[in-house]
Length: 236
Image (tube, rainbow, N blue to C red; front, side, top):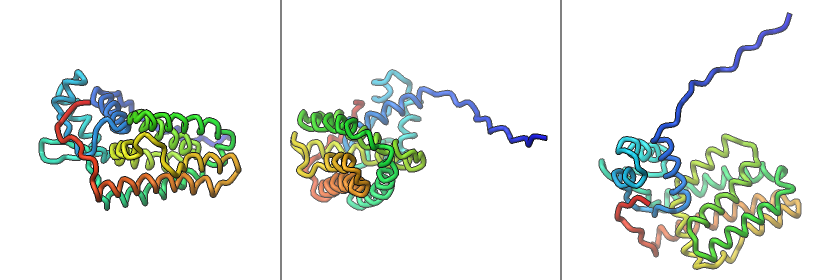
C-alpha cells in the first residue's frame, strides 16, 4: 500500500492590475534615480504622464509607500524620503548583515563568473565617466544582484531588494559626487580579484567595503548637504 501525500496548496489566481504595472514602472524609476530625495510626487501628474486614471496612480504610489520607497509628507503629498543620518546608519547595518551574508553564500557558485562580473563593472565605470545617473544606478545594482542571486537564498534576496528600494534614490548623489571619475578605492575590482584568486573571505570583505563606502558618503551628504533636490512635484 503506497502512502498518500497531501496535494500542494493551490494558490489563488491574482491578475495584475493597472496599479501593479504602474507601481513596477515607478519602482524602476526610483531604482534608477529618476526621482530625487525629498522630491514631491503628484498623483495627478503621474496619472497624466502614464495615461491612467487617478485611482490606479494613487494605488501604485500607496503600494510604494507601504514598501518604504515613498512617504506621505502630509495628507495630500507623497514624496521620496530624504534619508537622515540615523536612518542611513540603520540601512548600513542592515545592508552589511544581509548583503554580506549573500556575498559569502554566493562565492562558490561564482567561481567561473569573474569575467561576467568584470563586464558589468566596466559598464558601471562607463556610466560614471559619462555621468549617466540612470545607467550608473542600473549597472551598479545589476552587479550586486548578479552576485546575490547566485547565493540561492530567496529570503535574504528579498530583504536586500527591499533595502535597495529604500535608499536607491539617494544613490544618485554618489554618481554626482564622483564627478565623472571612478572611486579611488574600487572595491568592485578588489572583489573580482578575490574571486579570481579563490579568496572567499576577501570577496565578502570587498563587497562589504563597497557597501560601507557608499553608505558613508550618503551619511556625509545627509550631515553636510551639498546637493539640494528640486522640491517641485514632477512626473518623470
